[in-house]
Length: 457
Image (cartoon, rainbow, N blue to C red):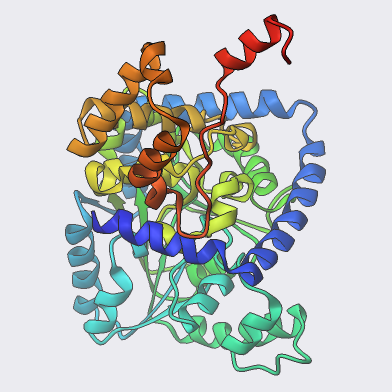
């Protein structure tokens, strides 16, 4: 299958890219130190995780009710809700809104969903200028890359890399220099934009509000100046009540960057009201399914939709840190992406992502909403067997292994060199060109044990 071949090839190349791995490791080390410090703000971090997980789990269980409540409360304040079944419907409706109002320049922030539905390419084809205002996303777009991380798009880049992308002096550039350069350029774009497109960290059911949590402030500014605002959010982003934010905002900040709370936390409850001096004149919320209902239909894997997109699981995943996000060739990468992507994009085509996991459990340990990520990956693997996504060769091979492992005579049959030759013929290409396949030991455990009992060892 093409997706698996691409994943294997790009993973092999990424593992050998020692410079990229060194940059990533350096950035992750800083993150882990900040995360350890951020956790100290909680008197009982484990209890906070469990409570947040319970709230998100109940929200997913009662999704239909909470989404209807959100729609009713949001429209009370003059907003409009659009329900989109798939990516095509979402793109068509957004383009219709923009073209009807003659919009020629759009700014966008805080949304991976635009990549999921292919919106940037469509807008460019329609002659609408499109600017990413999140600094990390802005840098990636300059280098013609897509985001491969839930919350830190440019985590795999060094200051030198970014300076080169922005055509700055790579010898004298500092993080502060780059920040000032990007800020000036983006502020002009935001001030002159006719519409903004943003994502949502949370959709709040009881107030009909959209919550955005960020450090840069570009989403907050983009929500204040353009006259038209379109929020695009997955149906899974719902939380029951505004009071839930007292838990989710600090949890997200700690898991995201190790901070106690993000610098900018914005709550939007509709378009500009009488007496207000800023904010959009028109505001739409596009609620996107795009096969999330397929994930919800799974008894166990539905809990993966409790994810709050902090990226903590990616930062601790040994597989993700070794191969990076680009190898996944999907919008959602790392452990949580390995769970939901097969159900959202095609189980047979993308189930290989669920096997790109060491099952170490580190992702589960750091998840701020207490998702058993490594366990859900096992459920995906179990479903892969149940749905018979394996090939005939794999079926025959595993059948032979099953019989051999049950029968000592089969295990002892043939000489060691013949066993090594047979195994190499079957599996060596799976191990990778740059890895030496392990050999069968000269003596098996039974032989060693008998020699020990006889005093020969």
